[in-house]
Image (cartoon, rainbow, N blue to C red):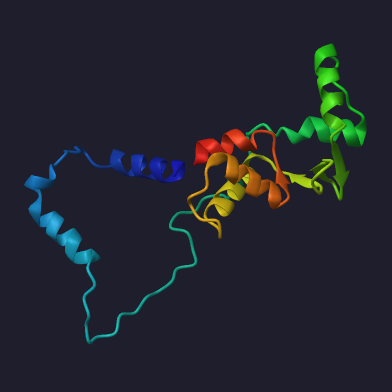
Length: 170
């Protein structure tokens, strides 16, 4: 979007004068009628041909998204795999206490439990996706926050803020 903004700004510099005016819907009845006509389904006897374009409208280098969210799993993984322990005393105790409940299988972090199978630990983006999928799945949209979190656990998934995230989502 930033590339399109820069392109439109450079094109607007070539126009000597221009202005953007707000026109209320009541004063713009022709445009309103045209938009409704364009969105309505009109059956025609003539064939309508659709051409699919496989190229971008402007030349721009491909940019991959870099996640800037803090992943809660990273310190625990480093502690288990590389024995990296923070230098601060309270943080060290907290991390060691947390790491006892986790294990690593195939370079993925799992939470151990006495009454449940291993739960695969998810990052923030995966957690949001799992909330949406479980909430709109076979259980339906009627789930409350606590029940949604329990159903996610039944699916074998875990993250530290799953209960509050589920309640906020619902």
